[in-house]
Image (cartoon, rainbow, N blue to C red; front, top):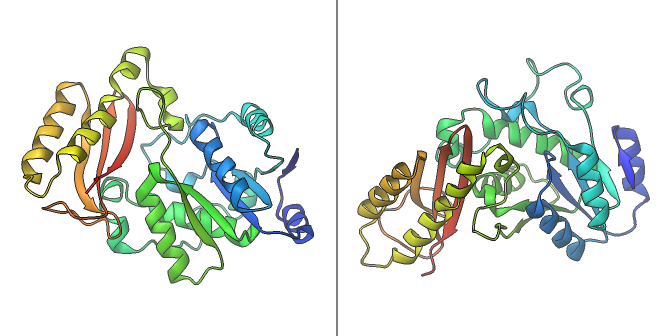
Length: 279
């Protein structure tokens, strides 16, 4: 397995390639959702590069940057077993050589980034856009793979790529779930055994709301019911909204291409999920 840790070596490797390259950016602590993206990438490009970097810019001052799981050896083994042979694993010195206090920032589109997770995590999506912009310039892939679990991130990056005329195709990977419905997330490892038993209720609630979001549905009433259901189970909801899947703006009535979005804390773990409305 080739593991690149500097720009010169990854660019030299990139220039040696003949076919298209797909990039799968991650923050490590890989799970089956990540590996599904890697396998999807392999069907779309002759070469696949997985980046592993815990980006400090996308963590708020009271978030879990210091405690975020860093499991590089395990991640490399999982990628090797999945058939991935190339990894880019930069460190902070490479990504932010002058530090993080006085650097150029890529600002996300306001309409997409001030709602949902952006409302409670100011600066998060600027950090995402900045690090992804840097990775795209360093690696120059033809294809960028992002999972639909972080659907707001996907839409923001799609718009960033279009707005900045970046020469890369952003492809979504379907949201992957564990057997009981819980969306795969690196933060699921924070859940204690009791919380892990409760966690699938977030997905169950969203699927139930999506199923009941007919043309005659009272969305406000459904939202209240879903919120109360989560609270009674021990969640602390951040948001629960029906939104347009393109604009991410809240909807009062269901429409084609709508999704239910939710974020909620369970103990110390913040979980997010989304489910499309089957209209």
